[in-house]
Image (cartoon, rainbow, N blue to C red; front, side):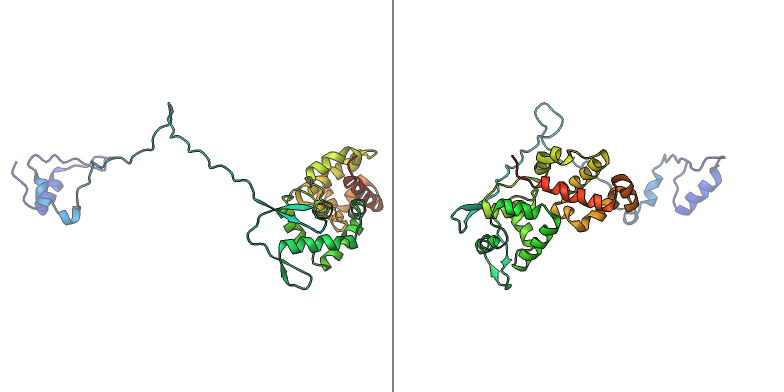
Length: 273
């Protein structure tokens, strides 16, 4: 066989000597004379592929295992706390927060020490004892009026929630913020509060009433005291029964439902005996 000297001649040879059978869409060429060298084009073909690259290094294996050793987790640093002494001479602990701003009723920035001291001094205007605060707080109507009055003094919901975080009581009731500032009473979680009095709350109630209050308490545990406001009652009824008419069929007249909703809160905030 003579060598092939041009691409044109190569195509002619292929055209004359190659048959494509049905279903066969390719053919093989046996190059006995290194004809491919006549068609070598480095610019078109590019550089040859390097097949000798080394594999990426793998992390060391764990002792006796196939997985790499897991690095130990860094230790969790305890939350830093500061102690603030109020007018009663007793100290309150708060979490250390680098940037926290409070304002007084006149809109002037004050320190956390001044804010808590002002709050401690203002509360006797509204209640003289923890028992009096419990009585105010356990009724949705008087609680709402109280919250509006202290907001006018510069102790609104946002400020109370900030203090709630600072005394590490985010899972507690806002009631606990007030009793801690005023009487140094240790906060308890909302879940713990419900657990302590649930049996007393359910005492004497029917099955449907228990189911409804159990639903209300779950919302309280999840979100807080705002779920127990009078304005929230129709919303809770619709969430549970999808219609006020269905709630009435299950629980009785609207006034009876309202009475049940108000009365259980007296037990929720009753002092543990």
